Image (cartoon, rainbow, N blue to C red; front, side, top):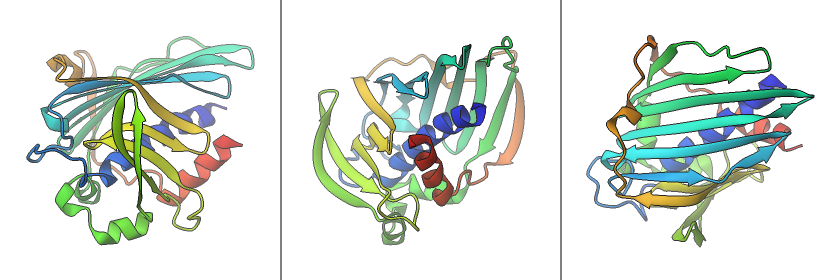
Length: 239
């Protein structure tokens, strides 16, 4: 069950990253080298319930998306045991950090004061760059634009991709506005914005690892779950 919780969080974050990596062109603003078309903002996502647990995410960004912080809280009751995981993912440029604020699986808080630093590989950065979204990547992901959809009062571009290249029928559907993810749905996994604040004054501390944490440099971030594995994990969670 703990592995399922891990994949629930991982899959949702992964599809969010994949979504922003794939949607630069139509709605991106004049943000120079930034990821988003708005300078700063906060996106509050609706709580998502699955398997007796609730996941809540909030996205903070500044400098047109060159700085991001995603805060995830997973909590609930599984088989009579209360659990809570509270984690943070930060990205500045091609450098990312992941650390836990709380990790209680019913045996007390086991969160470590460790922050894992990684360098995003060129392949990921290429997808996160509007100029690098090649026809090859669109073909590999079977990327399709599917009109407009309004989420949290904002009209965005609806699209779909097939993370699993061997199963094109298993599609992830998303909605983005100026490349900001408003909605991600894959099977029963979903992340839907409830409220969005643009031009928000996001404290600089949001994009920094708190004092007291040991930085563990993992050098280059691995590719993580292959697209095929991400698709299969989403399928298994949805059953």
